[in-house]
Image (cartoon, rainbow, N blue to C red; front, side):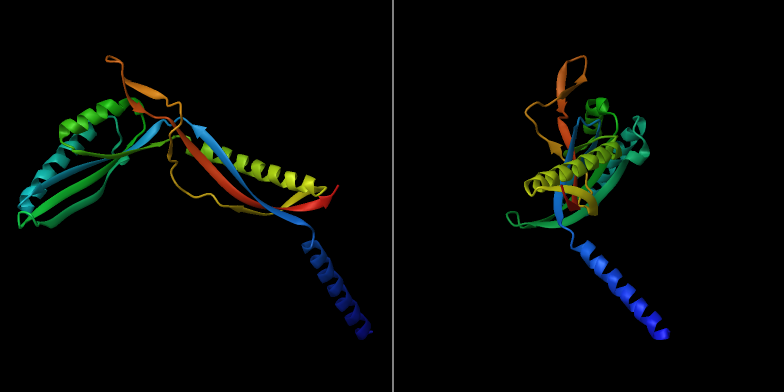
Length: 233
């Protein structure tokens, strides 16, 4: 009796394994999909800098500190929240001028500002310049609805992958079945500016009518890889 039970268990295990192997050998197709959402940015990360050069380290540092102090006091007077600006890098370097055969010092400090209202751009830049900044190192545009647009991009990426799978399946006279493996290949990063033929400019100074900031559009992308089952028509 024990031998019969043991034989039945072994037979059941073999059948189960065979079924699993058969399922794993179903026709499959792996495709990638990309989803892109283009939006007009409503925020920006502005990177500014203060730099001074001189023969004495303490004098150069003092000059830099005084300018940074004016910059921070100006920022406190604006509507920008204190959590939205931050010192990123501070340097005090000793260098050698081979032409003059003498040492000199460079002092630099970099500050990033998260500007959540682009209409303040002109006022902000003028105020910072008057405070003494001598470098604007870059402007990176963003959107306040980043998560919403990322979600939309993911949905588009899946639809793109499924459409590709359908094209291949129809050519093989098959149908697309369930998704077996889904891999998100999206890189986590801020969207980069897209320089399109039509650039939307914002009028920052209503009095003068000057257009000083071209915000353009940014692209928010999602990338996905999906393995689908293929079934007979």
